[in-house]
Length: 81
Ligand SMILES: [Zn+2]
Image (cartoon, rainbow, N blue to C red; front, side, top):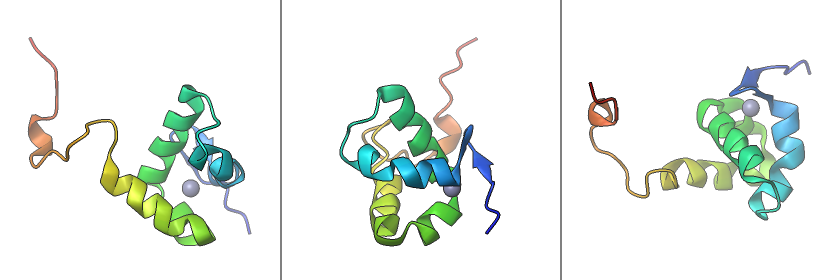
C-alpha cells in the first residue's frame, strides 16, 4: 500500500504508529494536536485504523478544542477588524 497521504503535516503511517500513545495521552501537546488535526481531515485513518476507528470517530464528535459543538461554523471566525 502506498498511503503517503499527508494531512495536517503528518502522514497516515505516522499517525497510526503513534495512535496508542496518543490515546494514552503520552504525546506532547504539539504532537497530539497535530494527530487530532490529521484525524479530523483524514477518512483513511478512520477506516483503516482498525480497533481505533471507533475512537477516532468519537474524537471527531468531541471537538475538545471548542468544548461544545458550534451549530454555525460561519461565526466561528474570531477575526476582529
Ligand atoms: Zn490519515
